[in-house]
Image 1 (cartoon, helix red, strand yellow):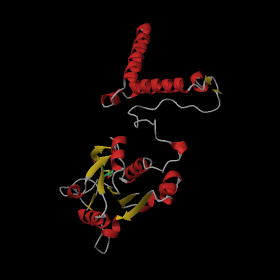
Image 2 (image 1 turned 90 degrees about the horizontal axis):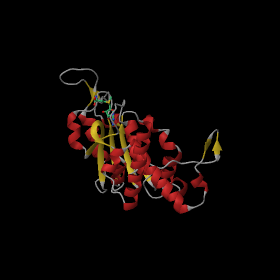
Image 3 (image 1 turned 180 degrees about the vertical axis):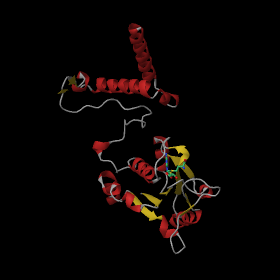
Image 4 (image 1 turned 60 degrees about the horizontal axis):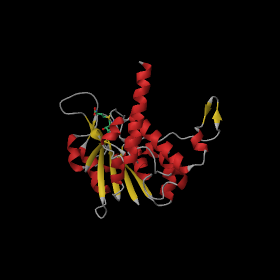
Length: 251
Ligand code: SAM
């Protein structure tokens, strides 16, 4: 079981997403635990102040270090393999690989920033900093949810057999092949014949080819880290030749 601990100024943010569908079932089955900690509960002053003006001036407020570090220290379970994460646009970009690594921890603690961000000294008290992409959110809450969901679905038993992760985009190092369901024909668009053929080997080869083509056209950067099998190299070369012939015809 992985225990997710979320330190936030807005605990209610998590009410609905954690009570729906796969994440709800994963908690009911005891495969994950998600606890949301209100940052205000870790303040020591009468007014439960969690933020203050930035030194040096400038717009907005900054989360103070004392309550955040207090929350981190109280939440961390020293007996378990724990990892604390500061959510920040300056962090390492979250990926499927990182999600796989995170499944090795028994406890994952998230610090959700708000306003202009957090006091710089908080960085010293966390194990890593993660960003979920090159854009700015209002707070770390949606980033924490993205990571909880991505990591949880990798835990054995969280997904039913009909929601298998094998073959999914990024898991294989490629984007996924196109998926179709009934009806066989929709408006002017038919399902590719090969998928109706019942020939498993042909279907496997078609899917591999489509995955390679999709990746080549949309995310060629993924090939920089993927080790291709001989079969994949051959198909990819073939796709490249086909595409360049098409290009030649057009020009
Ligand atoms: N002033 C900060 C900056 O320019 O980098 C942005 C602060 S943002 C409005 C408030 C909080 O949202 C951040 O402290 C962080 O916790 C969270 N956040 C915003 N964008 C994020 C991203 N791409 N990934 C992870 N967390 C993010």
